[in-house]
Length: 343
Image 1 (cartoon, rainbow, N blue to C red):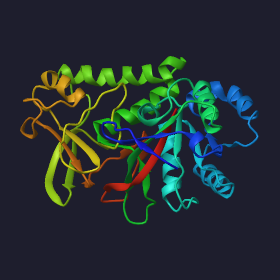
Image 2 (tube, helix red, strand yellow):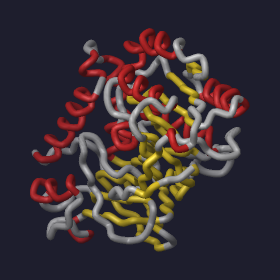
Image 3 (cartoon, rainbow, N blue to C red):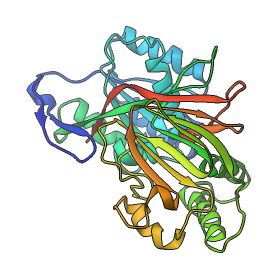
Image 4 (cartoon, rainbow, N blue to C red):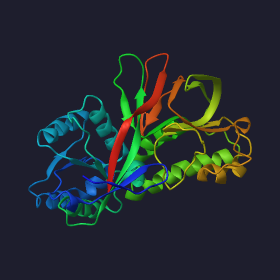
């Protein structure tokens, strides 16, 4: 299958025209009916899929559902795997694929934003509402749609201590970000409107924290973390926020990393009570080097291969809370690569 390189910042992109291989792609679709958007779109999606006899689809809600569905799809030689759900669903699928998954060769993934939080799909997925995105994907799989594009990205592997199952995803967070994630899960369940359960509610939650910080309030407690990056001991310090990601941009389109090293993982950390927070914010959010964004001022960003963290609180991976057995050690490394389909 000929692939033409089509460079993209922070990733490798290829044109993919099914007409060049002379046959349709075998498409498998995983749908989480409990994800926010998927609940509203489920019946139209199922009606659409029923018109395509060659497509295999499964409803998945638990990790075992995903494992069983992937095994069935591998046995049917599925070569493009679509996921309709939120960030947590994508993370569960990546973990099932990389942790002794059934595919000898990983199929490309097509992410459809079907959840309340869709940061991963916003970066490497298919744009538009779920039913519209699925219609384009189905047309493309049969060679009737436009030329698709493959975007290759590294994946994070997170080990949570001896005896635990490694987790795979694209956005690992600790300190204040993990606390905001925990609070957001609670407010999402309590929200009465669909808007507040979705992206608007997330923005409001984050905005409250940022406003409190700007006003000098103690909106989150300092999180002491002992850190080792690529074998270099960085000591134990109090942190306001820390994350490691392979996403090129975060919702709503920010790029808060500015390291120039060669590592595949983007690491950014903000010390507790950093200097000049409001003045540093524009450069921080855009990832542009600035005289305010220095380690001495409390802002660090590097491209790394491995991070080992020890802390007394939980962390999060793609919005899913992770806990570690004492002494709460998390190791974040390069876990492999995935091709994502865009049409």
